[in-house]
Length: 580
Image (cartoon, rainbow, N blue to C red; front, side):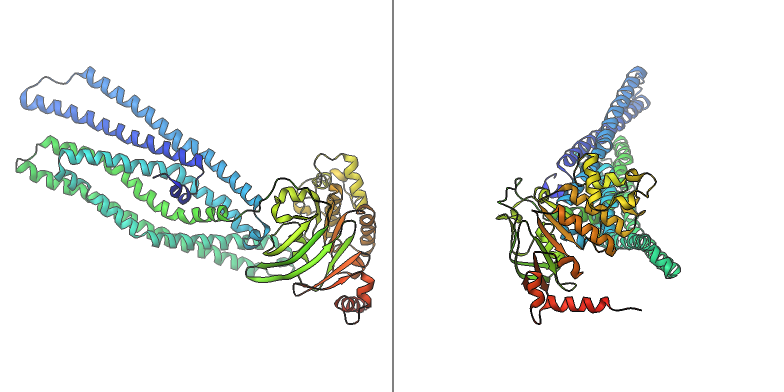
């Protein structure tokens, strides 16, 4: 019952399965203990009936009081254990799952994140886990415990009188069949509701991320109208889904409750025919008052389980995605980066085809080409942020696909066009390049990246908080902090993807000078559109249509008649003469 399929179905950890087992056990004990209370009441009524009919002495008040005290104590202990196992322990499971998801996301290749937007992942980590937390704590232990305890009680009832047992319990399987028959309908409704919720999250995120552009183009009302429409659609979908589920749950409950009427009818007929005594019917009526209570909850819980499958599938979708893994050691013979017949496809679209080139240690290799030619893809493949779908990439003779990405990246410093900073101080953001670096090391890297100029104008200098993703800084200032972070790391391989794109000409010249001094002896892979940025490179690799079309020193490629690089250089020189 609680095997691997169960674990996967409800997206549980190993500890979570153990917790559900404990919750199920104590739910069974609680339900049987409550039936013990029904037994005490039945025995008391039997004593009173004997007194009324046969003149037997009244039951001992002391004995009855003792039985009640034992029942109350037992009920308290069992309910307390049930609470601890079905609620208390589950909060540890929520922590385990969220930490596990974070660990999994940390190890997934970047190609995964290209297919899932931020709102979708946030919805999975927060909303989907919250929904599953309610299932883990309020549903599973109670539901499976009710199944087993009711089965035990049903066997006892059939042993006492199969006719009354059948009259009492016939509605239970019919009710569950009705509910299970609605499963597909409920799951489709849950999928539509989840899709509508994601639309709302996407709409809110889009509006917040583009608030400047929205205001600048006077599009506030249009965006608010779109967002309101998405919220209304989500509300309609949710109401419709809950209405459908509610109809089936209440219908099943009504059918199950018909068992009370059939029990009375069958019991009365059996008493009139002299086949059973009144107290037998009384016992069944006592049992009915309790046996239907767990099933009333179970019907609602089963409906919730159906709805939770969408969330569980989304969680398992993350766990099912293959992680980027490999050896825990990386000992290359040097740091030459060698592409051998490398191909890469993204969403069935071929981005790179048969790419071959070598970026030698101690040299600056520049990747150039028109937009969409595959330059940034090559840089990401070189650091194993993505995995090549064809061919191999070697660093110092080691296939990087065989090395754990976290170990591999210890030898890389990277500065990409899209800078990511944290809501912390300038000093702390630069120190991310090398944890434990001294203030002197941080300041030296900052000076080399030409950060002193703008940091000196900040109210608290390097101790100034810069806001979320550096919101208080300009694009060029953010770029320089990112460059300082890479310089501080001082790794043997440096990847620069449009690293100076946000700098003005003066600052670009200063940063290039700093890079030229500090990157001596390293393997440097540069991506840039500005020709003046790459003309000082030792080697240029020209990409077009996902293939290497030219390769050589800048001077050689400029002299090549009809060459792609020479043409790009001419076009950029011509555009520099353009004026308004």
